[in-house]
Each structure stands twice: as C-alpha cells, then as structure tokens.
Image (cartoon, rainbow, N blue to C red):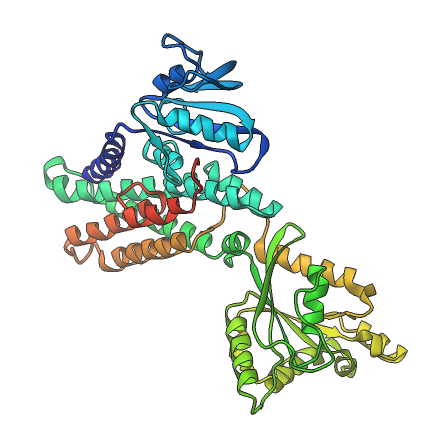
Length: 493
C-alpha cells in the first residue's frame, strides 16, 4: 500500500508545485499564418478576469461551453479590436483542467497582434511557453505522457496511417494498456509487502505468493507479445528508411526521381554521378517513407571521393529498414527459376563489397532495371521470376506493378493501427518495457519459496518494474523526459 501512496503523492505533489505559480497564460493556438479565423487561448486562475477585460464588462458571466458573438476591446485604449466568438471553459472540465477560454477572431496579423497585446495588459497574464497548455493538461491529470506524445504525433502527422496511429494513442489506447499492467504489478507488489509485514500476525496464507508468481508470468508474457511487434509503430511514426543501392550507373538516381515525380538527383550517362546520400521523405500510399539515393558500389576504386561516397552508402544501408537492390535486367534475365534469385543476390552483394550480415534482418527487394534493353525472350524469362520486380526508368509502363508491390511491403512493415492492439511508437517505451521484464525475471529467478530468500530485496525488484511503467506514463517524477516531450510542441498547444 505504501507503493500506491508514494506514487500518488509524488504525482499530486508535482501538480501542486506546477499549479502553485498562479500564472495565467495566453497564446495564439492556431497557425501563425493569415487565415479566415484564428484562435487565441487563455488558461489559468485569471482567465475570467481576462475575458471580462477583453469584452469590457467587469460583471460578465458567460455560460460554460457556449459560443458568444462579442466585440473585443483593448483594456488600455478602450478601442475595439475585432468582433468574434468567445467560449468559456471553467475548470476542471477543460483541456488543461484549469479555467480556460478561447477568442476566435479574424486571422489577420494585425488583429492577432492587437489581441495578444491586449491580453498582455491584463494583470496576472503572461505569454505561454511552447507546449505549456499540454503540460498543464498533463499535470492536471487530463492526459498521461503517452497521450501527450500521441497528441504531438497527431499535430505532426503527414500521412493517413500516421494520423490513425497518433489519434489512437492520443485518445488513450496505449495509456489503458500500460495502466492495466501498472495496476496489476502494484497489486502484486502490495500483496508481497503485506506478506512480508503481516504474514505471521494476520495468518496470511503462503498460497498468495504462488498466485503472485502466476500473475507476474502472465504480465511478462503480455509485455513480451507487445514488444514483438517488429517495430511497426516506430516505423510508422518515424518513416520507413528505404535505401536504393546497386552498382554504378544502374539507375538508382533515375528511380528516385521517378518515385518522387521530380528531379531530386542528378542523372547523367557518366557513372558515379552520385557521391553523397540524397534523402527525401514522401507519403507513399498513406505510409511515410524516407528514400535514400546512394553512391554506386563496387569492390575497388582509387578515387578517395568515391571511396567516401561508398562508405556513406554502406552506413546508410545499416540504418535502413527496406533495401531496394537495383541490378541490370539483362543479368537477372539469365536466371532460370526463383530458387536462383537468392544465390544471385548473395553474389551481387559480394560484387558490391557488402557483407551479407550487413543486410541481416532487413527486408530486401531485388529490382531489375532497364527492361527496355531486353529481347522478347529475356522479357519472358524475367516475368517468370515471381520475387523480382522489373522496371524501366525510361519507359515506366511497369511502374504500377512496382509501386503496388512497394506499397504492400510498406503496409506489412508498418501494419494497420488498431485500437485493440496499440503498438509501441517510441524507443523510450520499448527500453522501459524491456527493463520492466528484466526486473520481473530477476524476481522470478531469485524468489524461491522453498529456499526462503530475503523477500525484502525481491520486493524491490517488483517496485522497480512498476517504476518502469510509470516512467512511460509519467506517473512519477521524470523531469528530463518531460523536457524532451514538451519542447516538441508549438506555442499555443
């Protein structure tokens, strides 16, 4: 029980310290561009004072969560600034949990500047820092840290799949899963501590410890299943790093330009045009992809610049999630059946001076380029190879098949976001969950009822496993993590 009490007191204490400053904050909440309507948000104990000052009525009492068409005035000059909508959200039923309001005004830069200047003239108000509204929502218990990060991902989402995943996380899909594990681990730790403290006095049965072991194994199994997701959530959040590699002048830059539908890389008949890594991010069928064009690879060269380019290409390959291995269609057309493709890939990687273990664990797709140079017989032979994608960058008639296959592979890599099976979206979550399992493993290994070990030490391992979950959700003090999370928000959110 002390564990539950300490966790709650730590969290509530942080909130009280944060809220005790008494500051009321304001900021433009919509984008900093000219638009039809802009939203200016205010939150804190002086919110009602601020809205009364702006509407020039000291006795004004708006109803909660209703929109009012009002004239807005500068409290110093008494001049009318604009006419717009006012909404009042009394705490705790607001985004931040504090008294809040919104002014919806015309989105000109002059109106926005005048409104912000007017709010700055109200005593007790100050401009918000980046992410401060969401930070107050977190400390007010409106969001846990996974929901906060999901909201940040939703703001930055560029593709449909990213939007779906971020929306699920921001509405608590991960929070509910992790809170379930946290509560079960706390219950196990509480039962163990009760057994240690009161077993003899209260005649607590030893069977409760055996039941505890079963529950811990069940939690451990669920966390392991959650971890074995092939990093789908992280790939969808950060983008699938897709590297295009191959021999010099095989058409890597032409393929990148074709995929991007614009001239990203320089293309010439001269081999070795590309020396550095050229990266570009795209929305590909709803999935984020980071394409990387690389220098042509070969076993040996005396050109120091080319050597550096080749080394950078290999470093890029190591960091990739998907490899598009580009080769001459004429060479691949010599293969007689699908079973010959894997040995050819191994041989070709050797020609490129790429160790096989460098591609281990990565998805690799062999692409046959320059099919426009093939004879009819070679075309027919190439079509028999089901695990090779054939294209011509000069005659892109086969590109729809290539693009369809690439989109399918991206879907397999990223998966489909689902509420019943939320995925890990952050390396921090993965690290803490792995540490949680380590602590459970240590407890299960060291605690043996037949040997009667020091159960106080065993209990500390269970408490550590709970803390690992709480570091993900923010239930315990973790200022270094909070600083990283909230700095990614824009001002006004």
